[in-house]
Image (tube, rainbow, N blue to C red; front, side):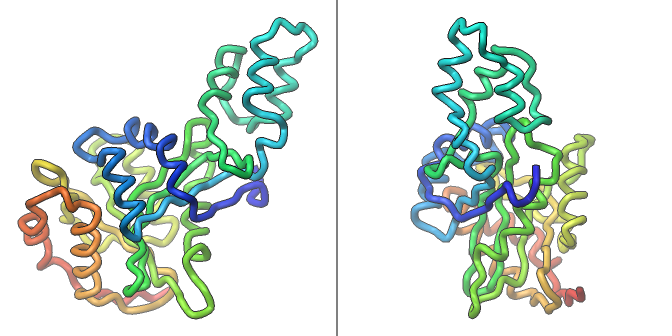
Length: 264
């Protein structure tokens, strides 16, 4: 798929209900919030939903019309024609049942753009920094470079003539033998992210998870230790407002936070 067939934009919160099952699929209960919690963040904080879409994919009458055709006994209908006309050639769709399942799971925005990925980000407006909380590329489109496309597009979504984004923070799982964990690290480092903490702790309801903490600078600048500390405290108090032991977790690694001078 060519870049000019894709669009990334700051979306309305109404799409999140249909996307939440992907978070449930990817994360165990202790590492995710409830649907109601995420909706509270989207509605009341600088937490935003970013969509990655195939532009105007729905213009080919995908969805109900094709489902009706597929489920009918029309011998003149060529399944291959449907697949070749409307779907990513790399999508894994081999028969009528799989094709129907694919159509039923496809999500469109109001402009008939097919949603193939999404991100959740927190804007630290006063610090000119983004916090990348979550990125998902939907099944059938993974491992094709779309994650990089989303991250490379984020700055333009938030910047204006008078406002520039300095960089973005990420929480990254420490490798434990799962190839996907190392792939995520490789993605962030290819994008220019630098590991700034090895002993960061992600707040969870009953304790915390040891993680790496990364920062991706968008241009050369000095990132003060106080800015890193304030960013972590601000995001934790906002996203993890339901967790009571934030201070004790933060105190375990706060002394490791140092000023860093990024040169690009």
